[in-house]
Length: 298
Image 1 (cartoon, helix red, strand yellow):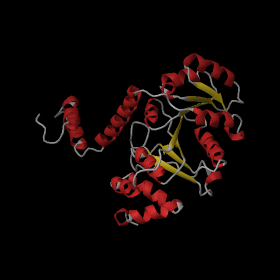
Image 2 (cartoon, one colour):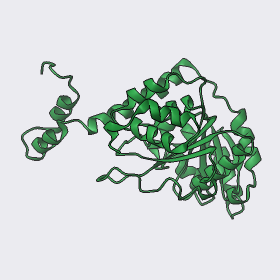
Image 3 (cartoon, rainbow, N blue to C red):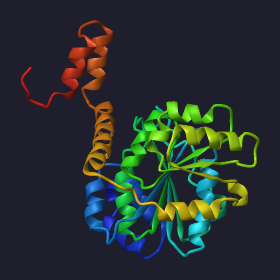
Image 4 (tube, rainbow, N blue to C red):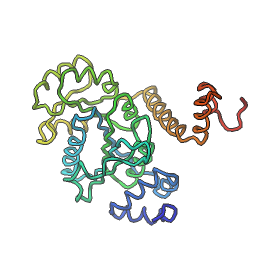
């Protein structure tokens, strides 16, 4: 079905009736030009939805941890959505990892929505559509959103603008704590989890983290569920002690990241790049022209 032919109110009614496919269609629409139409049709969310961010370096076990958390919250009867922000092809913009590859145990559960979002070149690590996707899921009365991000270092700082708490997953290994600190992951961590805690080096990683950060540190063996009740308890108990300055800083990071995404899609970017490559313009002038409002004097 062509996007323009989609009846948004009909989709909203079907989604509120409990069908998962219309929810996926609505999430696709808010990634595109019909975002405002979808949000208007949904209306304001009745309550703020809890968003738990899960991030960390590749190979730490983020997806396994998310799957374990889904199971724990479903046992309570909560409706859970997973937004997995995947690396995307710079050519197609499509998510390389399918919605259901990592969460097979939950795919037949109507109380669980699993959705992959491509980053589409969005340098903040979160897809540009994530804030709107959260609004959609809140309006559809999901109780909890687990937001799993790509785990590529500095870009993960943006997760703190959306999630509370931010859970950083690390695996045991020589220097892991120091590398996480260098990548900026410890700056955003509300909770730190040393996964694969049955492996050699786990106790040392915990000790190293205690030197590097004052955040709460937990251990986990996600496939066996060891440490999972303690992690769930810590997530439930966490409520960020905020100040206006911290809220403004997170909002600033989110705005700048989304603005950067829009600049990458600017219709004049290709021509400016060609001028710089050909020596007809210097990159400083080109950058000024890119961010200059239409009609502004030079």
